[in-house]
Amino acid sequence: MTTRIRRFNWSFLAPRYWPVGLGLGLMKLMAALPFRWQLATGDWIGRLLSNIARHRRQIAAINLDLCFPELSSTERASLLEAHFAALGIGLFETAMAWWTPDEKLRDLVHVTGAEHLEQALARGKGVILLTGHFTMLELGARLMTRQQPFHAMYRPHKNLLYESAQRRQREWRCQLPPLRHEDLRGLLRAFKRGRAVWYAPDQNHGLRNSVFVPFFGIPTCTITATSRLAELSGAAVVPYFPRRLPGAAGYEIAILPALENFPGSDVLADAARINELLEHYIRQAPEQYLWVHRRFKTRPPGSPGVYPR
Image (cartoon, rainbow, N blue to C red):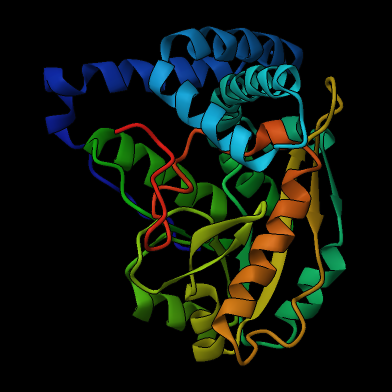
């Protein structure tokens, strides 16, 4: 990859960027801590945040109530606390993704199914690396680059300093430039060149290009873009799922075989298939999924809302 030289943006010295600049500096320091310290401190910070971020805690609690009705109220409360601990650890994992050297991460990750990605890439039509929004999203992507460089689809951050840092780190670590979510031409060019593209379709983006299919048994507004991209490009859809292992055992990246007969003739069936697959892996470590997102904000016609206004 050709290294891009960027000039320093002097406007980032303005006072409005100082809090973000301080936060980025702290993240760099966080990445230098021993792994066990990162886990313990992140756990503590996350549990502290659960008492401060009351609105997000309420959203997560509603999501867990909807998705895990089989659990007792005590079990769901425990899961909620574990989720916020995972969010706190996720802050350190983002710092690790951006600033930890490869040699320090090498012994922390165990990858299964790497041959599935190799086989899909050998077709020469590109690969959609399909995953979900987990608390270790950034680190999971970084660890995947050990297997294959890829483009990452993303939505720009509103804060320009954070956006600049985020884009620079993702481009450096992923070894290929990130692609904005609306850049269809760039996306198709990447597939035509046989490249892999990171993609997570599991957030609520409204009714446009979406269908209602089950997710944890709930009719959920789900985008159909995965089917359309696979049909337009011929790219294989290879799911992968990251998971932080118990204790300080590190991380597992599970790469699955490319989805067969995808896309099918029915976009609803395709979307339901992806949700079912995602749900299966969420249940393996439910505290590590991003429950603070309003996943069920868009409701089927006539259905009441589930979140407070």
